[in-house]
Length: 149
Image (cartoon, rainbow, N blue to C red; front, side, top):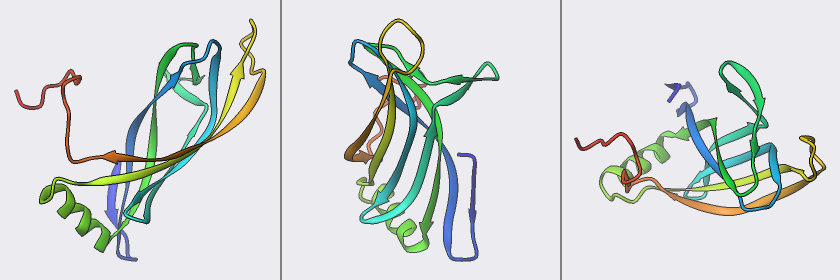
């Protein structure tokens, strides 16, 4: 988490660093040109994010490319703005009912790199179906940092 504060309008705001894994099953490289999305709790939008096509590697801007047949990871910042009543319900869902779920809706422009050049051959647009993320049950089986030790 980068920063959290309560604003005068009665909501809790925060910037969170998240990681997205992008799977490319194709036989050609892709570049995620622009990606936007929203987070919903129940039916209320509580956050937004934008991922552009560059990220920092060793302090330098580098285009985000996912090679053919592989998975690429990218970090991005999500801006959350949760009303006080929604925050209270989210707290109860997480700590008392062990049942906190958010919906994520994503739209992205993808550049396809067909041929031998490192340049984008054409662009396409994807609107992914709304996905549910379960936040209550934490599975650390693939995590290198064992929290229970």
